[in-house]
Image (cartoon, rainbow, N blue to C red; front, side, top):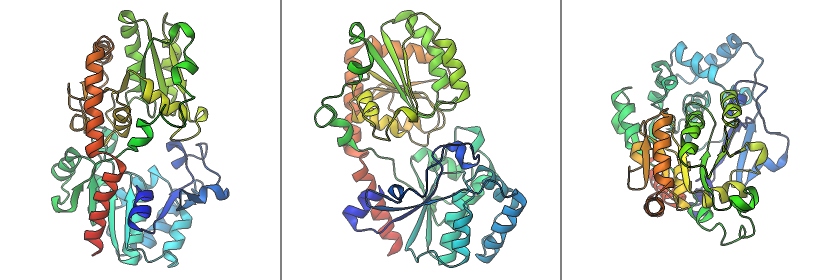
Length: 406
């Protein structure tokens, strides 16, 4: 979105982020990190990127003292519980704290921060308070996940001038359950680069086919089920593994493809499932991929028969848009914001969260009905074209920024 705002609307955007590559690295030095001294990562598609190191080793009491001084300096009223909980989630970006204190932050027109409930929400708010400019937060609030329903964490959202929710359901929960001012919450959905997914096998990827590469000759006509995301309980990856025995009992000519970072729980479960006869699983991690638009990922979306992500922890679910942009039917969990995104029996199917039997039932239903798969996929593609491209989302964001700044 920042790229589109820069190229189409002449914005000058600086992006501040940590050197973490995965969630673990936000608070644990053994997580995956980027080399901040590599100049390649300072400019991405024309955007200036400030990648800041995370301080893991300073005692939390010292961190609290350090940030409290800055909080008092900016006259921000925040409870100790909120501060401590945000700090525990990380990342603690000491260099940015020094820059705020030393008046070395440029005089931006607007500060826009993302992702609840991490410490960067507090830092973005402090920058806005310090330079006396409007602060916006897109929290991606995972309201179906109990770990996020902590009033001492949501307190931070009250201090932002404006909240952007991804769905009407997210907005409703923030107002009714956490008392946020309804006049301070707007709804702007997520988006997808439609052309990038739609044009696979038409342009530069026409020499690379997923099934041709990873299925043997006898398996080329087998059906394929794709999952793309963090492989944990909340995202539904482990529930999919538990559903596999019930699926292959009825439909043996199926491949299951998983793309995304693994977890210990996922690795334990997949080792058990792989021992079952007729189980075919292809498992990619970031180490097997070259980036967000890796050709294995793009062609997997284009060639899959079903996209399956029965998650309870998505504020929106961009991967559903990626599947629809590829013309594929989706299956999601009937919880949280997902029922607002997926119209059951119109562009996808809904299942009960963490119910392997229900997951298997809906997967088998789609595997056995090519006409239904095509209908759901086409309806999803039309919704993306008219509502969920990044150009549409960027235009709505630009109009909101203009309203605020002017």
